[in-house]
Length: 405
Length: 141
Image (cartoon, rainbow over all chains, first blue to last red; front, side):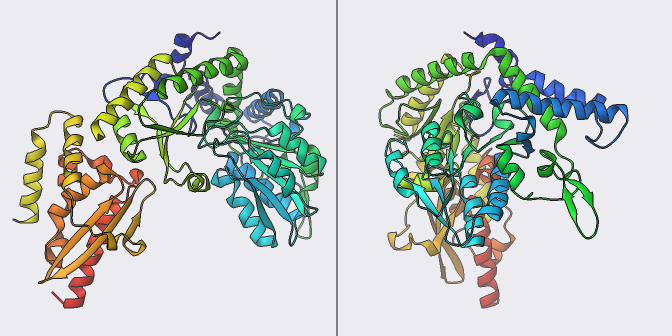
């Protein structure tokens, strides 16, 4: 069990009034709020220990390098990677996927090869693959979805050919909140000897992730969606791939020796961390993961599941509501429209009632096209949200409906 | 009435509202009154695509004046369009080019014109100004 009142006090932004009352922040799939400990950690490191990592011999440089590598250790343990050097710091999920699309593509993908993605991917797990495929003359194949938002796994089996080089799917879909059966997808793909990249941007903060048990080849996620700072993210990759692939950006830190004739790349993980990385961001992310561990991730996930049941039940009573993604396998995200009220109109009204939701296509135009709509209103909850907030949200929806009637 | 006089009139109309709800209810009313957009003009060529909503803009040039017709898929944007048309439609290119739109800020609906809303309204105003410049140049008026 979690003490919700105590937890809410950890998040300063949640105390803040926007118009008339403290904000009901239901836009967690876009970004999450930061606990005080993360904010304090970032402040502290800028104030007391700021110095570049892996460079100097002086006290400050050693201190901050240690903290940076400690953050890597925390993340390695959290996702149960085999080695610390399998954790690459990036700027976020988008960069992580771009890295793999480029580096894996350069090494393994050639003319007429195939990449499998799903119908329900975020643009950032579509476009990098498209760009790589264009460069290489390769093709994208798409796992279809069913109307309730589940992927059609039976169809996946039929998509494989001897040209298939990689499968890239999200752990949880960002616009609908549906949890994909990634264990199964990985198992099927591996039976065809095809590696799998999991876009975990919406997964890791709401679901247990054990990369060893999953046996995924890559897992990408963003710091800011798991209560950490913006501008920092992670790419987990199996050592074998990370060693074989070429780096995708170059510069300082990623090299061992440089002559004008030839450069020898550095060892993992530095080979993929060219330039000065967002090291204080990484330390902040480490603090965020520690914070989650202190509360207990299972406690968080159980509470969020309770919120999901509560909000699903409550919102289903709003006359004229249409929910997109009705599968049972979902996180606490409700993507919806009320009758013929435009998502933008609903969003503006909710904003005036101090409720923050996302409206639009959620960087997910193929999914919207699949449903034949322009966009939805998306309420995405997190473990600091409450039953009372859900009650207020549903009341507000009824009011919106009345206003536009 | 001049563009500024119409803007003053709108500000006065809004001054009776005491909270946001009344303002938005009024916008919804205005959206219902917005008419004259012919179905045949709801074409891609007239579409101003925002990230959140879409606006269609059709223009006519008659007796030295530009007449705008517009529509949107969202009610609130449509309400705003009704106000913009009241201010800017049926004016000479010269008037439109020189118009400063200050009423939106005064009635407290600036958020609708902030770029983050990406609802096509800013692009619509830009497009209106471009039409005005084009007609001004074409007819040398």
